[in-house]
Each structure stands twice: as structure tokens, then as C-alpha cells.
Image 1: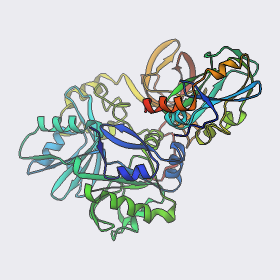
Image 2 (image 1 turned 135 degrees about the vertical axis):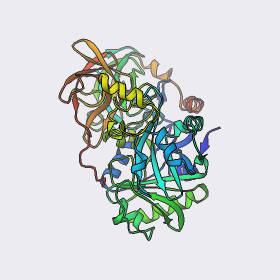
Image 3 (image 1 turned 90 degrees about the vertical axis):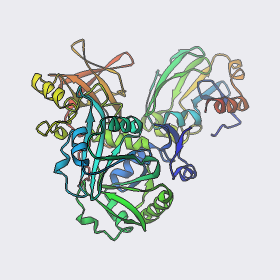
Image 4 (image 1 turned 135 degrees about the horizontal axis):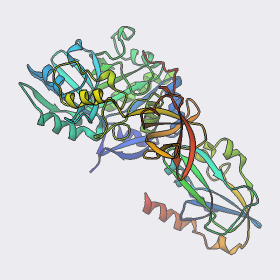
Length: 364
Length: 128
């Protein structure tokens, strides 16, 4: 049976098109369509229900050492209330999931992909070491995300916290519209924005209060379809498309979160070896020169040979081009390289470009 | 889902409206909703002749790309320039400004064999 978020009935009232995603009935879009929703987030502000995301809390005396062992970024670098983008890897260096790590005063919060919540929980439990307490609290949490250049103005109306002092990838525990929340300056759109985690029972009130507070700024709900496009325009990876259990963070352009010089962590040896031997393929951005929609799994060619494959693709309303991500064999990964994408049997011209596709995003 | 009573339908979610010897063809509200935002149409040029059920083009949208089939046989006498420039008109007004092609019919009987609004409603209920 599919799960419903606390906002489900409201999505229906708002005219959302609902799809099942990772076991949840989620709004993929509302009335105006995906491209309009993308434009709204780029220009003003949108509200997302992302309660399908998974939350795992880890506490105990050895929590820091344990999380540092199961993730690839360096958790010891985090100050209280700082947030970190990271990933968990298997022993072979391939990716279990990408995630956010929140360091809170008495615990760590790991925010994981909805489609991976169960798998991740099992993986974390399986590798449990030292004195730690692990709890998957996903079903008790509503996560909402306010994204766009004027997001701060909307959220500021609902909290006493001075948000202009909150840096990107920092968080706090505070009341948002009187509701106890973890509030962070984070997002998956490239725009300035805030994500908040509240109790499921408070979720609907929080949603409605944000929409009311944002009315003067033209806020509207935004669905998962637009979220996918917004992240693609920034080259933010989507697990299941751009990264998965057969890709490594080094191939995916995530070496900036792969701290190979930190103490032992799962996957370290394999990743060191891959780095030494040289990375043979890279996740790159490309733009279509000829019109055509690149889609997941389509082949990428050069001089009649297959050199890679598409992992994500769409039409970008922000740059008005067909864009995609894909793994391409070295040395064809370099920006400026002309490539062909096999779109339903027709080979269409494309070119490798530097990330991100959309260069005017407002994130702090 | 909007299914106007004055049109006929196909199993591929196209609608047809007849005006004299001409037929207008487009995508149904259900089809546009399943495709999500439409990005581009590729259509065979005016003057092309097809039999019923032959492919006359394709539509590319965020969710999928699908072929377009002739609901009735005949000659394409007009393609809707508006949808070539602003394809989202098909999302907004699939039965009006979002029509796709105008066809000079070979055989008007083919129209009468198309799916009735009542049966089309049943079809999309079964599929959704």
C-alpha cells in the first residue's frame, strides 16, 4: 500500500497530478505544468513537499566515528548545526546513496533518498560499530522545502531567527510558524532556499502557513517534475539515474566530497585504487546542438563508436535547450567535445559543456 | 478528465472533429496529462498522404515521446503552426487551439468507426 504524506489531501485539492514514487503518492506537478513551476522557483519562490525523503538519526558516544566510517566526506570537519553533502559507498567504491549529514548538538541526522531509505537503514545497521543508537524516523517526519530567490523573505515571516545570518549549508532548531522544526539553508534547486523537518502531525499546518506567508511573494506549490529539472539544470546528481551501485563518486564528479586522506572508511581502498589507476569515464553535462530529447540509457557516440550513455535528460526551460548528463569515456569527457546522441535510432549532434547549465542561480 | 461529447477518439488517445470533408485531429486531455509538458512536435509536411493508423509524426514531452497516428486516412492539408512554435498550447487547450493537423479525408466512414465519447471515457478509466 502506497504511503501518503501529511499534505496528500491538500495536493489533491490543489489539482496536483499524483504519481507513485518510492512507495509514496507524490505530486509530480500542479495545474500550471512543470515548466511554469521551474520558472517560478528560478524567479520568485516555490514550496515543495519532500516528505518522501528518508531521515535516519544516529546518536551515542561513537556516532561521529561511525558516521565518518560509513560516509565519504569528513564529518569531523562539521561544526554544530553545520550540514554536509556526502555519500555512502560499498567496499568496491560504488555508491549506496548520496545524503545530507546534519550535526546537531545531541545527535546526527542523515537525510537520504526516498527510494533508498530501507536499503540505507539496513546498510547502516549492518555496519554498525561502537556505541551508537540508530533510528529510522522517516515515517514520523514531514519535510518541506521553500526554494527561490525570495525564499528568505517568506521563511523570515515565520521565524524569530535572523535568517540573513544563516549561511548556506547551516541549520538550526527553531520554531517555524510556532512548529518545532529543524530549519536549514539547503536545497536541490540551485536557488537560495530552506528545508524544514517537522513532525508529521504538524506538517499540514506548516504547509498552509508557508503558502499564506508566501502569498505576497507569489508562492505556489511545486511538484517533483520541476524538482528533477531544477536539479538537472545545476548538475546535481539523482540517485538511480546519474549515480548508482555501479558508479563511483570519483566518476560522478563528486571527488570534492570524497576525502581520501581521512581515516578508514568503507570504499576508501577501492577509491584510492581507482584514483591511482586513472578514472576511465566521467559524468558530464552536454547540450544538444540538434533538437532532440536525450533520455536515460540512450547511447553516446563518437566516430561511430559507443563512448558512453545518457543518465538524465530533459528540455531546460531556464536555458531553453535540450540538456543531459551522461557517463563518457576519457578523454572525450572534455568540455567542447562534439558527440552524438542516439535518439530513437537518429544520431543527433551534441556538445560536452561545463556545469552547471544554469549559471544565474541565487544560492548563497 | 475532459472528454467532449462532440468528438470521436482513438485508442492512441487522439481526438477527431469533422467539418465537411475535413477532419481535425489532436491529442486528448488524458494524453496531454500523461505526457506532461510538451516540448516539440515533429510532423510530416502538408501534402503528405497516409492511410488510417499510419504514423504522421511524433510528440516529445517531459514524460515520454510518442508517435502520432492518422485517426482517418487522407491528405494533410494543414498543420497547426501555433503548436510548432508554442507546443504548450496542447497542454492548455488540447481540444481547441491545440489541434495538430487538418486532413482531407479519403473515406468519411472511417470517422464513424472511431471510438465514441462514452467508450473513450471507459477506456481511460480502465487505464488510469
